[in-house]
Amino acid sequence: MQTSFLGTKSRRFKQTRVLIIGCGDVGLRIARRLPKHVRVLATTSSLDRVQELRNQNITPLQANLDKPSSLHRLAGLAAYALQLAPPPNSDDSGDRDTRSANLIRAFRQRSKPTALIYASTTGVYGDCGGEWVDETRAVNPQTDRAKRRVDAENVIRTFGKQSGVRVSSLRIPGIYAPDREGGNPLDRIRAGTPMLVARDDVYTNHIHANNLAKACIAALWRGKPQRNYNIAQDDGQKTGDYYDQLADKAGLPRLPRITREEAAATLSPMRMSFLSESRRIKNERMKRELLRL
Image 1 (spheres, rainbow, N blue to C red):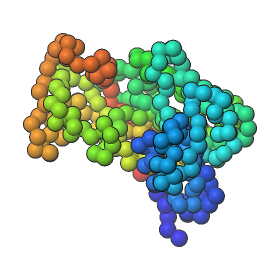
Image 2 (cartoon, one colour):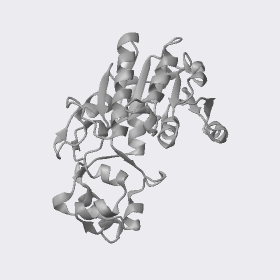
Image 3 (cartoon, rainbow, N blue to C red):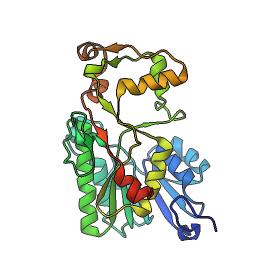
């Protein structure tokens, strides 16, 4: 019998159910890579996506993380769960991820999953001045969206400690893939979006969407209890250098460089928030415990 990506025999997955909460691009990539013996269920709040999920051999479940009454049926459905849905963008929630809180409240009502994996962000570390960062570094979120991710990590970790559920948080940087909507870095080069000059530039980190999907699957079975993992590739380059290399490989003109002051006057607040934080992400724990490289 052929050995799977996880290094286990495929019969181990017989009758196993995996629940994906927030099944967007990464969720679909995960579903396609799970062994055929796994039954995949996924939440959606849109009727328009029901048939799309069915076409991918995924059982759709109507649920809305902003409506707690719609989440009761999720408890007890699957042994393994992946929480991929982002926190709300509304300022009404403050620093709290009300969506993850609603999900955990539903999970507490009936039989709980064996494992719950949460997709967080490396933004929880805040600005690290370009230093290398591993999972032992204290979180220091500096944006509202990062603060909500920290809140979600805490809510889910507490749930794991109290219930015995094996919980892992995956801290993820920028996700890219040529076939991912909004995730092809060459599009930014073609658009001519300027980069910062070298003296003002920040370090950036990335993960290919397919490699992220593999890491999520590995975490379902290999993630350690109440454990954080940085899910990033081996880069940690300055942002401008990264795009220069891509442009050179693609035979495209390099992007123009501007000062931070010029960027503040021309780029969006969202883009500037990314350019205000610099860190290089270490991934040894991911390699050692999840991928076993």
